[in-house]
Length: 148
Image (cartoon, rainbow, N blue to C red; front, top):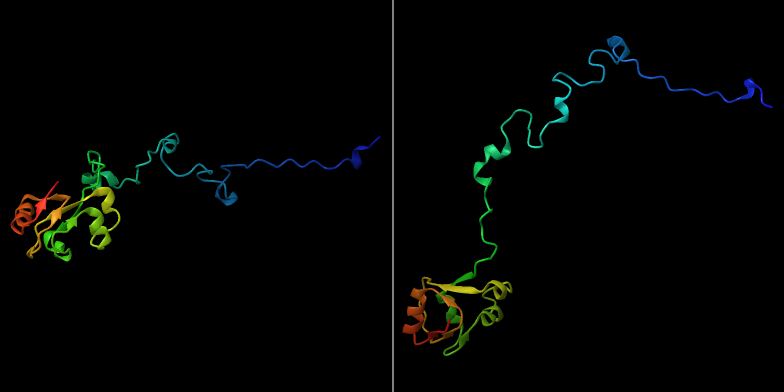
């Protein structure tokens, strides 16, 4: 049988004695933070920035931006004078433009549209892609045709 003096000592951690003067290090606010009613610190909204104006108020145009935007990407645009790279009576397609490295590979996904540029077109070409009305006229004057 064990006697009391041989048992190991059990030391309970003493609780913090709060609010017993500033010298104790746990006086004044007694670990409860500063000011404001205590329930308020639980309900601070995520967008609250300490009283300064909210970011959504500072940049009002960005609030609804992109909500009604189309998810479809528009076709890549090239000028008609680039088509002089092709030889006479050649067929111009998106794949042909990619082979000549005029456009990137992503053109096959989004397509290509030809618009009016500054130069002249002096080759008769068969164009199988989107083209603006003014470019259609230029291609047909050169002796070519637009099939799309």
